[in-house]
Amino acid sequence: MEEYDQALCAHYGKMLGLEEGWEVTSVDLSVEKMRLELAVGWVCSGAVCPECGTQCARHDFAPERRWRHLDAMGFETQIVSRTPRSGCEEHGILQMKVPWAGKHSRFTLAFEAFAIKVLLASRSVKSACELLKISWEAAHSIMERAVERGMDRRVLEKLETVGMDEKSFLRGQSYATVLYDLDAENTRVLEMMEGRDADTAELLWETVPEPIRESIKAVCLDMSGIYKDVAASMVPQAAVVHDRFHVSKHLNEAVDKVRRREAKILASEGDDRLKGARQLFLFNPENLPPDRVAEFDALKDSDLKAAKAWAIKESFRAFWQCRTMREAKGVFKKWYGWAIRCRLHEIKAVAKMLKRHLQGLLNFVRFPITNAVAEGFNSKIQAIKADARGFRNFLNYRTRVLFFCGKLDLFPFLTH
Ligand SMILES: [Zn+2]
Image (tube, rainbow, N blue to C red; front, side):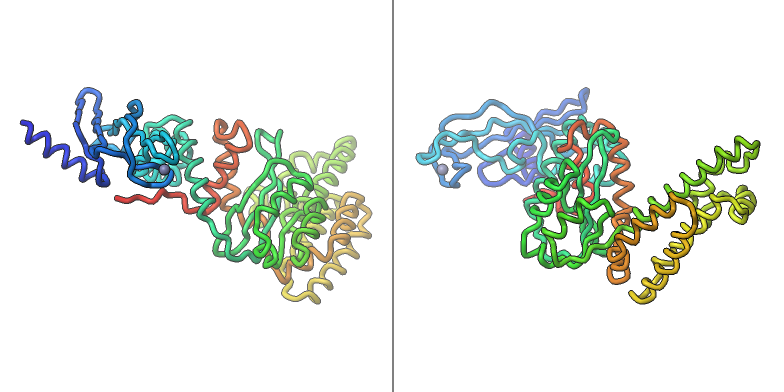
């Protein structure tokens, strides 16, 4: 029987890939609990100092600790061990490193690697937790370590086009500033910080090493001014490109204001043509619901103010198709002339704003970048936000965003 036990221990030892000095000393299988417990012991006489790696005397053994390991044939598997404490002459009494787990983790590296894969593939953290049979806190700590690992390893080699934008979190009560790498092959979130003021933007730029910052050719920003002023001092060589989706947003809002103003007037005259038409004016024409196409066709061809505003907004789309600066300048000039004479103050206000930011709009010809290219991870960020437990505070939110959108090398190195 003893021989059999020894063989069993050796078998599990091999499966764990234990380094020299460590051995499985007992195997405890509980069929009722569906649990496999592997006791692992340090079988050498001395110890190894975790600071300097020298062989030294063993002081004693630390209290028993447990690590969750990969399930074995559906049995939840745990490693139990009393880690020796080394008595190094130089570094004093320290707990030895164990080869199967990171410093503060309650999971083995192999389990963490598996958990990371499951988290990345799952639709929500909640469903990953269910699959892995771990708590939300445990999942979060695994993500935290993974992001830390990934950020430590990340070496920024070059950045050509980046974007800076604000994002709201905590149900819109708090804001963060996000820095994106807009490289077409490798769009990712580089870093984010809490707040949306000039100081935050400056600190965020400082997270990019100076030589890399100097290589940036273009930066995509909204038209609000704060980020632009900071970019002018932090990346003075970079061309500012205004985000086309912000431009669309301003134009859409202006159309909506015109429509609302007009709807009130019409309603007071008993004309309800604009009632319930809000969405029709906000849809891109190609996305209109088929059953409402006729209704909208009639509205947009009418002599309503809302129809005129909508037509002006729509015609701005041609600007983004321009291939040369000259063409873009021509298209803008013509559009501006129309918009500024339209007698709709909401539209005129946006037209003036666009003219003030014309250089940043024209730069789109040279650098057709937008922060919404990050569409893929914008939807991921939305999903992260929907998972409400995920971010009671900013750091949790950052961990989630970098875990899912940072394209980091998250996995621990496995020796086995
Ligand atoms: Zn030492």
